[in-house]
Amino acid sequence: MAGPAPMRTISAGALAAVSGVSYGFALAPGGHPAVAWIALVPLLAACGRSPPATASLCGLVFAVTATGFVADWFPGMLQRFFGSSVGGAWLGWLGLALLVDAPPYMALCGWIGWRGRIGAASPLLVGAGWLVAEWLRAHGPVPNPYALLATTQLGTPLAQSADAIGAFGVGAAVAAGNAALAAVVTPALRSSRPVRDFALAFGGVAVLFAYGAWRAALPYGEGRPVRVALIQPAVVPGQDPGANARALQQLLTLTDTARRDDTRLVFWPESAVDFYLREAGSDRDRVLAATRAADTELVLGGPHYRYAEPSADTFASVFLLRGGRVAGRYDKHRLVPFAEYGPFGGWLRAPTAQLRPGERMRPLEATGASIGAFLCGEVLFPEVARALSRAGATILANPSNDAWFGAEAPARHQLRAAAFRAIENRRPLVRATTTGYSAILDAHGEAIAVSTLDAPALLEARVQPSNATTPYQRGGFALAPCAGGLLAAASVPRRRHRHLGGTRP
Image 1 (cartoon, rainbow, N blue to C red):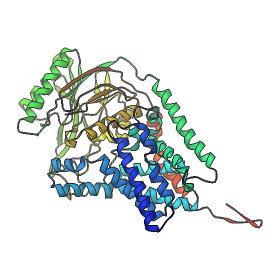
Image 2 (cartoon, one colour; image 1 turned 180 degrees about the horizontal axis):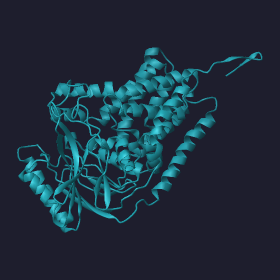
Image 3 (cartoon, rainbow, N blue to C red; image 1 turned 30 degrees about the horizontal axis):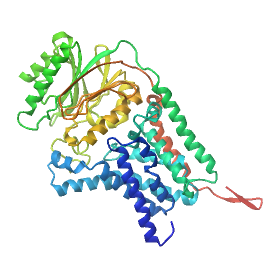
Image 4 (cartoon, rainbow, N blue to C red; image 1 turned 90 degrees about the horizontal axis):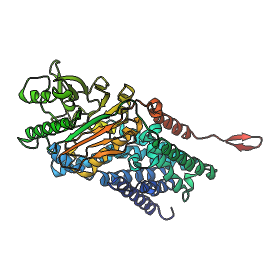
C-alpha cells in the first residue's frame, strides 16, 4: 500500500472492517453462501500488503467488527441471564471480542504478514491457517465455536463434504478460495508459481464440491424407519411462577396427541422438567405415567445429581423414559462457560455455574434406534456427536433451550450447526427446543419439519436410523494437527547457501 505509514495502517484497518461486516452478512439469517467466498478478500489483501504488526492489528479489527455484527444479541443476553447492567453487558461483549475471538485471528493475520516477507502465504496455507484459527477459538480456555465459516455453506454441495472434512475443513476450503481471489491483487499471497497455487486452490474446492454432490445423492440408513415426534411448548421455564406448570402441561397434552397419532418415540426440550426424576413427586408421576401407556418412549432434558462429599455433584442430563421408569441417561459433557461452569473458578460466573461434566459418552437405547442425545450448546462441538455416533447411535437428538438468546439469529444459527452434525455423521437429527427453532433433519442435514419461532409445535415424521461410518468419523479430527504441522513447516525460513558459485534454496 502506497502512502505514509499511518495512512497505510488506516487503509488496512478499513479493509479488515469491510471483511468483518461482510462476514456478518454471510452469517445472518437469509445470508447467501456466495457472500462468504468474497468476505475475507479485503482482510487477506490487507494482511498480505502489511508488515506483521499491522496485519495482526487487521486481525483484531476483523474480529471485533465481525463479533459486533454476528453477536449483537450478546449484551442483551447477558442482561437477561446474568442480571448484568447495560455497561457490564457491553463490557462482557468487549471481553468476548478482544479476549476470546480476536487472538486466533490476530495470530493468523500476523503470520500472513510475516510469511509474505519470507516467501508467500499461498491460498492453501491461508486455508490451513484459517482451520487452525477456528479450531483454537473453539477449544480455547473460554471455547467459542459459534459462527464458524462453514455454516455459511449449508445448502450447497460443499457442505455435504463435511462427512469427510468436518465443519472446520469446509471453512478452510472457503478461506482458501478467498485467498486465491485476494492473491490476484496481492503478490505476497502467491508464490513464484502462481498458476500452481490457483490450480491447487480452485481444483481442491472443485473436487470437494463434486464429492459433496455425490454424497448428497446417496441414501443413508438401515432397517425400518422410526416414527418420531418432538414438542416445542413455547413456554420458557422459570419465566414466571406458573411457567413451569404451564410448560409441563403443554408437553403432556401434546405428547398425548402424538400418542393418538401412533407415534411412540417423543422428544421434549432441554430443561423440560425442573425436578429430579429420582425423587418422588406428583409432577414426576405425571411424566412417568405418560410412558406407561401404549409403549411410549420419552426423551427429555432435566437435572440430575449424584451423592458426593462435601456436596452433591449436579448434572444437566438427558433421560430416556420407558414403561414408567428411567431407562437411560446421558450427562452433558461440554458445559457453557460462566453459565454452567466457571472457567476461572469462582470468578465471573452465574449462580447456575455449578454443574459437573458427564463422564461417559453412550447412546440411549430406545426401541428401534440408539439415540445419541446431547444438550443445547453441545451442538456446536462436532466431537460430541461424532463420539456418540462412533459409540453406536443411529439417531442424533439435541434437546435445547434457545430462549436465553432472546433473538432469532442465534436460534437459527444453532439449527444450522445441528445440520452439520447430521451431515458429518450421516445420521438423522431431532432437535426439540423450548421456543424454536425445533426441527427434524435427515442424514443430509435437510429439514423434514421445522417449527415456527415462539409458537407451540408438535412435529412428527418418519426418520431412517443410520449406522453409516463416514471418513470424518474415522479421522476427521486429524485435519487440525495436520494443518498445524503444515503451518509449522512453512514457518521455517529456507536457508540459501552457495553451490558451484551461485545460490540455491
